[in-house]
Length: 123
Image 1 (cartoon, rainbow, N blue to C red):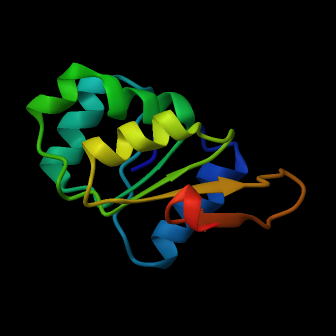
Image 2 (image 1 turned 90 degrees about the vertical axis):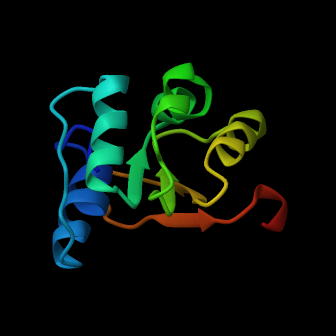
């Protein structure tokens, strides 16, 4: 699932190119709208969501989420800015089946990044 602008290295490489290389279907949303996002996740059984903190906030706190089946999500990777512990915990409570990771060091000039999966306490 790609809700992020494709001109940024996170969405271009980590979502679009990596997804296509792995043989995955990639759903691209032209703009973010929580209802549409939730419908797509439920309908297409989205398993990997590459997001940014405002999307994590929407998934963790928006009451509309309770009306959709998001059990297909296995991995949520957040980039662009670090997530606070409270927001991490809220998303983990909402999506207990999903592995939450944070992607850091996304530079437009350097195609290297660091993924930090697992709980904050384990690092």
